[in-house]
Each structure stands twice: as structure tokens, then as C-alpha cells.
Amino acid sequence: MSAHTESRHIPEGELSTGDTPLVVLRTTDLRRTSTHTLIDISHRLRPRDYTIASLLDEHTTLTTEHLTSILFANPTTCRHRLQLLRRLGFIDRFIRNRPGAPNPVCWLPGLLSSRYTALARDDSPPTARALRERQDRVYSSPTLEHILAVNDVFVSLLVHARRHPGAALTRWWSERTTAAAFGHRIKPDGHGVWTDGNEETGFFIELDRGTEPIGRLIDKLASHRKLRAEGGPQYPIVFVLPSRLREQNLHRKLTDRPEPSLVVATTSPESGLDLAGPVWRLAGNGRHRLTLADLPSSHGQPGPLAPGPAQPADHPLRLVLGSAA
Image 1: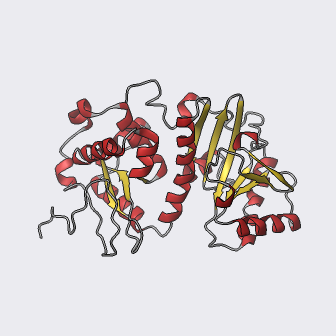
Image 2: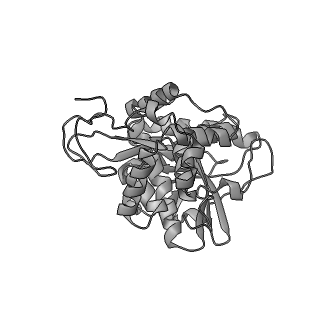
Image 3: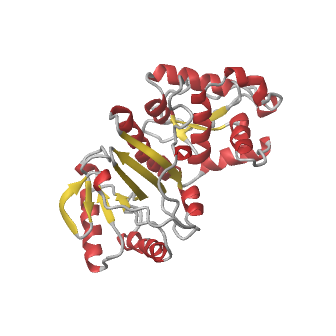
């Protein structure tokens, strides 16, 4: 088998359901694509392509389904576009091997999209070797399922916004960006600002997959309490839990270890899958579930630990808003 032959042919952007181990499927060779520049392919790129580059840079990896849901009207159109971007060396991909389950195609920054996002920040672009190692780290990461699950949450909000005029996810920061923006006082799985009509709700998300003791979840609140005391915003900490039982156990623990200075809200699949809807139960007041927009939230006083309301530059889809992607 030659270096450019894939061990198993799977159409670009499709899902595999077999249990045969799969290798990482890549652009044919970074040495070949490295001879191209952004200028060389600039006539082929559209605002939506730059949006894909920015999203992959910020959020590590997104599946074909994620990108279809938030940027395309048709799955076939999405797959064809991603194929083209891969052939251009703009993005890359691998197949997540999960024996006995669907194996999503996960997209990563390629050499040219990495160059674009780095230069747009006035950073030095990665070398081909550094990018290859970064890609392999994502593929091999023990937290990959967690990363994809967190991205599921935010993608679901973007999907809701596509279907409901007046609603918008106006800020979506990864764990890395969130930690840096709040002085590394906290390390939630992400931060968002949700707008619905005149209501604007900032929130920190903690996605729980049931792998930690409940006490560990509550321990995470101490850093949020410290952030509040040092001038941080009054954003709710929202826990997305895997089951109603797990959610009930967390609320019992919160009764024993209350955090009166914080707003804590929870949800689980049994309450509904539309996370913008009335699925959120407040700690200490769980009689009625609230929508995301109804959760108590305040940006607080402007300061180094309070970034304030979302700005147009924060919008995750800012490059395609008002354009013909």
C-alpha cells in the first residue's frame, strides 16, 4: 500500500459503523500542500470557509454533523464543501473509531487554515510538523468524547437560533479562551452569552458525563465563588448532567453544601433536549424549570475579570452574518 492510499475507503464526511480499527484519514501529504499559500487558494475561499477555520481553531474539532447543522442547509452540500477544503489543504479530518457505534468524521485545522487563524491573531503560524503533532494529540486525546459533547451543547444552541429569529448565541468561548479571559481563576468547559429578545444571559457550562464523584462537581464551585469576590460577573454555572438521577443527587449535595453567592442550574436529557428551553432547574428553587434566557445573570461592573456584554466580534458566526456564504 502506498503512502497516499487509505487503508479503508470511506466517503468524505460520511459515517462508518463497522468495528474494524480505523486509521487517521488525512490530506494526502502536508509536504505537497505546504507549497501552496493562502493567496494561491484565496479565490476558492468564502466567508463560510473562514468561519469553519475559526471554529475549528477555537473548539479543537467539530463533526460533519456539527458543521452541517450550523452552517449549511443541506448535508450533501456540506460534505462536498468539506471535501474541497480538505483537497486544498485548508482543513483535515479523522474518523473517531468507536466499535459498535457510529464513527463520526471529525474535522481539524489543516495547514492553511491554521496559518490563516494564526496570522489573523498576529501569531506565528505552526510548522507542518507542529500541526501534525497537534492533530495526532487531538485524535489520541482521552478527553475527545468530552470535547465533542461540550461542542454538542453549544451547537444545539446555534441550531435553536437558526430556527428562532430573535435568539442568538452571541459568544461561544472554549475552555482555553474562557480560562484566559477570566484570569485563570476558573476552568469551566466553556462560556457563552445567550440572547433571546431583550434578555441576555451569560453562563459558564460544566458538562458532566458521570465519570466523577458528585462531590468533585461541587468542588468546582469554589473557584467561581472566588471569581465573584474578585469582581467577576454574576453568571450562572450550568451543569449538563447525563441523567435525572444524577441531577437529583447533585441537588441533594447542594442542599448540604449551599453556595448562596452563586446561581447554579442543572438539566438532564429527561427534561428535554432543547437547552434554550424550559429545562433548567435552579439549585435551592427547583419548583419550575426555566429557559436559559430566564436564568439570573449579570455582566457586573466592567473590569479585568468581567468582559461585559457580547460584542459583534464575539459572535461565532460573525464572518457569515449578512453575507452569502
